[in-house]
Length: 255
Image (cartoon, rainbow, N blue to C red; front, side, top):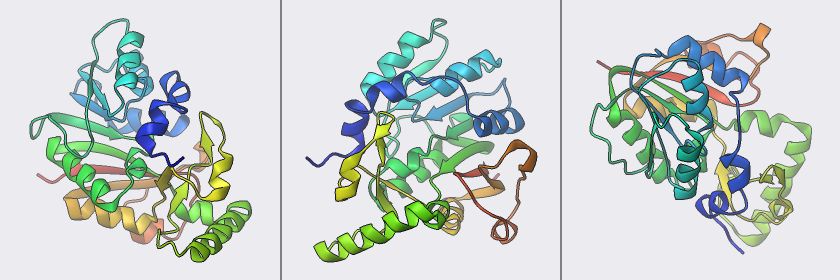
């Protein structure tokens, strides 16, 4: 049976994302380096509220979060014993928030990549730009096609998918890849090239998509060990370094 990401997160993937805890290393680093604990902050694709609940422990106030899965929002509200975080059901491509509503926004957990079409991904970025105040900070993370395609194991899988899609006459971009895990477990239907898909970006695509919407790029980085972590100011310098894990883009809205 064909399944999109909304169906997957509502069913087979629900428990994994509803109950996750703690910030990962890069999330913690970016939040503490770039965000102000006193400013109004929104997280997109909050799931069970993991990131916002951890930010609350760090002393952040005025926290908001949305997700397109009502069950996630119910779970997030239950987990927030303080009831100080405002959680809502929202669609990233059509938000109900007013223009310039937030000082800071987080689009981590690669949520843009879960949107199935290019038009939906573009609309979500436009909405993110619209609701951010001038001079505000936006944190984005994206799935990294370069890293995946250069891995020996994944290279063979991508080669296999290309062949399979050619045989089927599919014109689906190879950057749309089946999710290899659902509910934290191997998804063997990915071998049959079945949905749900996520979109894996090249860094130049991300840069172009963000700047076309109107963001200025303050810093770019990818998943590396703490002692090797560097922030790059331009695509020219970022192109010269090894890329692994996810991409992270720190942006601001032009004043």
